[in-house]
Length: 404
Image 1 (cartoon, one colour):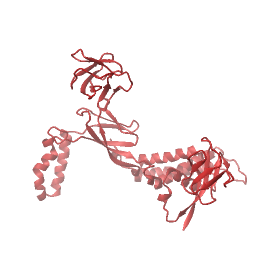
Image 2: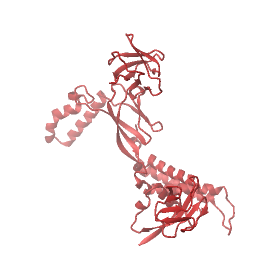
Image 3: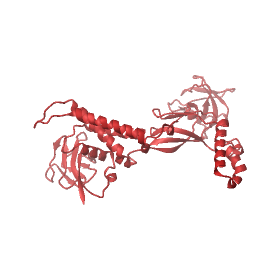
Image 4: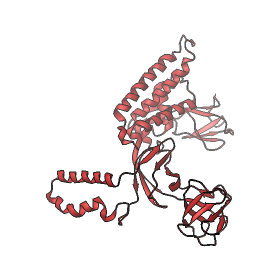
């Protein structure tokens, strides 16, 4: 069997001056097409024709014109809510229908609707455990660099000191590119080289000029002390340096606790109970923290930057950040069907509707109907409060999951 769903105020996708595309194909004859608020007549000799979900106007429509369409779609009863709400637009239609559309005219502007839906999705990703996922982000650390105005013809080696003649900046040379045009270095005195200035090699008369371009001098991760992770990262909980199995490497090589434990005790584990094994692991963890420590990290999701101590790191070294990242609703469309997202978005729209109507409280409409926006607003506010309390008590990660 099939059921019918009313889609209200859909803005079709503009394909050309005359063609617009709907999300779904309307039930035959059920569509109402509005151009700048005026109802258009369907038919070959009238304003437009429709074929499946494609609307073709008989005249050119300006890009600034507003096209809105109401229509009915038919879905099988086997179609689940999961397939019915596969985009933000479909979630909007669901919320408006729950508010009473099209039987009741919902006094909301398109921008208000978009803002409230975005607010619901933002709250979901901030506090709901299904709105984020643990991820491991890799990044190759960069050194500061300068581009020269012309290839450097003299000798320059790792460890040479650069001195800016104008900026007085000092830099330790890591290397120079094969074309002798780009030098990578580490800032030594906190000052930055200036584009177009002359730079001298310390203890020599050799000089060169930096290219006079705003992109010629770049401050790398090793000098800035941070890595930009992007706006989707919610929290950073750990940093994992590039591993090395050599003596003196990041894992300590043969002096690593894990290595020594495996070398000396793994053979005996077959005849040892798991309690002993667990105690060994706890000792190892304590020794690691006492002798090697843990690299401190500072992250603020408003800046998208993770700061950490760069001492001991080298250019081109890879680091891995253990982090929590927000899910993209456009990629993972099941977010739109989540119970909390649906109810929270619905009540946000209801609150906005009530807030709009409150400004006309007491005005009588034809037929003796009186607007009561305050009641609609108060109901929505109370339901939102209940939803927030439920989210924070049932669906939020404990604080230590996201501390970083």
